[in-house]
Length: 445
Image 1: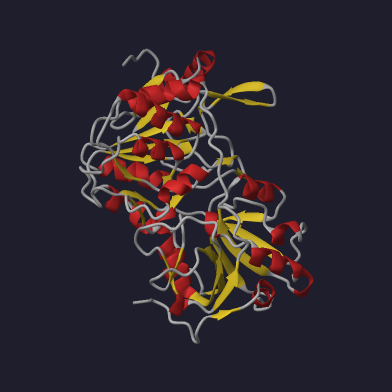
Image 2: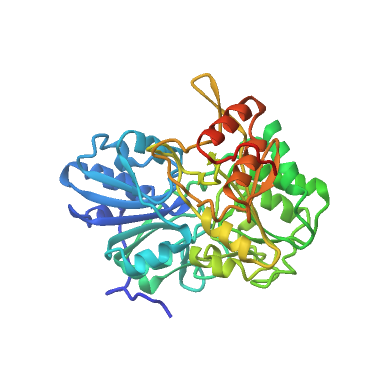
């Protein structure tokens, strides 16, 4: 049964009429990724001068938002974001986008317990299906929880999104207040960065640890995608997938016949995910495909659920790690870059699963202002956010090797991480570790 009943049958109205429902001071919700509305967004931007202090929550914007482009000084609209895309990061740098810290898997609970009711939620959806539902397409996340809390529900229907199978995949027409017609444009694609030599070196070390029947979670980025490519070459079979984000690399494994899900405890035979971003080929593969099972993020990401599958393999990136093992994966000092996402939850869930492993991968160095710098450091950059605590980190991998930090003392951790640094920085890191008593002099491991 629907969890929310609209006060009257759904009405079809224009985007301009829908925008007229917005009043100053309201909280709106645009949902996330492929579900962010476009036609409504443009109509609301037209009303800029009639409104003030309109606050909008969203996540991972895949194209410019009209309300922000029309209001560069932020006099009318305020943008709050759970996880930054490149566009959201640009808006944050301009003072127009504000981050909301989270563990991604907890967000449905935030809406149900801690966030005041949403005045209006506007979601882009697939057209009404034969069962009376507007399918959310390849972005499930916390949309059901938002709808439960919303005073007004508006759907912007489009033929440009894939229709997906799974649990709690849409909103019933009886829950909807207003329907507007979308632009029917194809779903936004997210280009896959090609792996470089360092990505492939890191991926080779991780791929060697994956065995037949393991259950994969793969994060975003060139390194995790490179792991998928090397798994194709390795011949590993009978894999399962229980992941947050579904990427093109996992689709390649599926189409090569390497994914069966037969050994999974949860949803055997199904590829479980909460949102997908990638190529047109990815979306076409998902469309009405029962092998893929989209679920709310509190099912995909909470550690006590993840751990129910045996031999979970979690593979994620970080941007900086200190000599005690703290991971900073979402900021560069006080400049926010992305978000916590589900990294810490998958690290914990993989560790807790029987035979599970979590891998954190990074290049040992990066370039900034023409200077090579180490990603392995004595201290995190001032202002950097710790995404995953040192106590949770299991395997760390760079192009120079792999170490496991579980059960290691601070001196052992420092020594192990220094061995993963670029040779140019190892002597300095060792000196710093001695000076700050992370390494005892004269002691060897």
